[in-house]
Length: 161
Image (cartoon, one colour):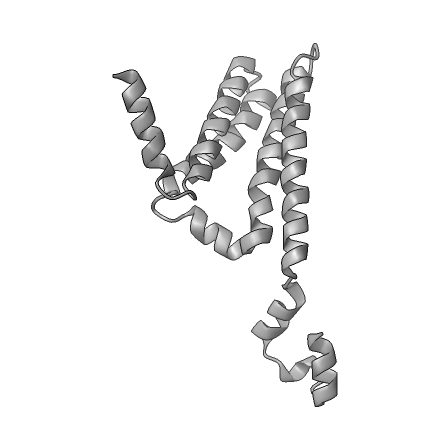
């Protein structure tokens, strides 16, 4: 639609637009497209995680397949939100002070899971890092819900006392 407006107004060539406007024009997606790709990436992430969990019980390379698919599932689920808010805004929000520790732990566990499965050959450590991935991803995700972290802390404090 914007291109049609430019043609009709006589601004057909992109040289009149600034570099930033050209980049934004080339990479902007409609809201429905953003939602569709969010759902596709998020569903793919869930599918990879479930597939990884099923492959855990294969003899031999099961733990390696589990680590790869579970990590890919978490990466796909994390990247799905880039379609909703954009990659730059996603990165800025990930490294805000309230999410910084959860983000670092989550990214570190993603890498350490693969290291434990492929280079160190420590199956128990790979499973431990997958559990830590899950916990860090959960803590990171609930940081987007107002007062959710406080409610979870209060719930666990009440249960433990």
